[in-house]
Image (tube, rainbow, N blue to C red):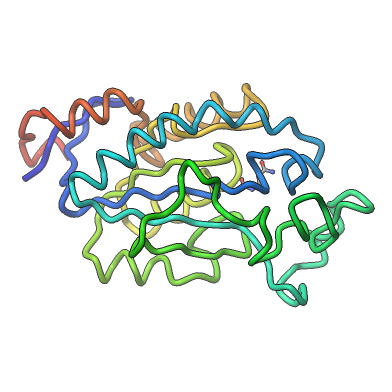
Length: 231
Ligand code: TIU
C-alpha cells in the first residue's frame, strides 16, 4: 500500500514495503575532527545537525522493517583504488592514506573510516564500501536494491551537495524514486546544502522529492493511503 508523503515540489506516494533508507557516509572521517573532512579544510561541527534526525528516521525505518543500507567512502590500504586526480587534491601531509589521529585518512578498516557510534549499523544491515562519491559507482548497491525489490530510496547523510547528490543522481537515472529529508543531510557549506536541496526538487522533482524527518516520520506512521496516479 502506498502512503502519501508531504514533500517539495508536491506530495508523493511511497510504498514502504519497497523503500530503502540509505545512510550515506556518516563516518568519523567526515563528522569528527582529525579525518578526511577536516583535512580538506572543513569544520566538522557543521555536519552534526544531521545526526539526531537520522537517528529518529532509523528508529522508524527499523520499526517498519524497511531495508536500511549504510555507505562508507574509503579506499584500500595499498591505495590501488585511489585515482591520482583525487589524491592530488588533498593537502600535503593530509592525503588519503596519510596517518592522522583516527588512523590513516579515508582508509578502510581504520577508526576514522567507521560510521559514527550513534548511527552504528544493526547486525544484518548492509554496509556498502565505495571508492567514489556516488554510492552506485564501483559497488554492488544496485544489485542489493534490485534483489530486495526496492523502488523508493530515502537518502540521508553527508555531504548534501557531494556524496548525497552524486548518489541521488545515479539513483534517479536508474529509475529509483528518491526522497530526501533535508535535515537528515548536512554540508560544510550552508549555502551548498540549501542549493543542493533546491536543485533536487526543482523542475517538477527533476532528481527527487525533498521533505524533512518529522514530516516523513509522521506521514509514514499515520499517513493517508495514496491514489496510484499521485506517483
Ligand atoms: N568533501 C565533501 O563535502 N564530501 C566528501 O568528500 N565526501 C562525501 O560527501 N561523503
